[in-house]
Image 1: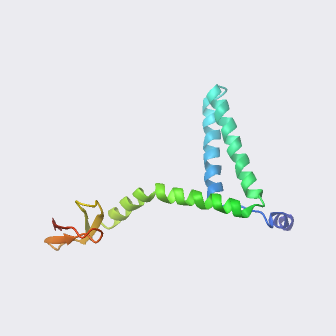
Image 2: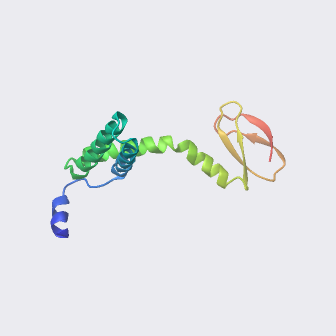
Image 3: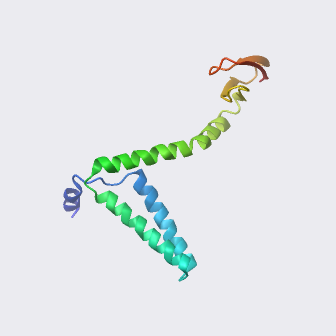
Length: 135
């Protein structure tokens, strides 16, 4: 049985990050539709949930792998861009004991300076502006 499925999937796209995201959103919509019962909102959520699940299967069994890879790369770029601010906040939190962060007053770039240096002159690498800061 496993060999038959493996042969069936040859040349097909399979699963990727976009499919996993669509599957999770579809499952959440179906769970929410159960909470709303037989109301119009519940019906709409059910239809949307099953439509997303259908899209997941369509993408998984598609033979147009180049198009599916393009869709996935667009999704990954959008996700990376959307989560960029949170990633930066997390990095600053991890490095808070060793470094102090300053914002350049002219170009608003974030600058990282080692802690424990006292009052120093900080030069922005992006615009060349110089300002004082206490580390």
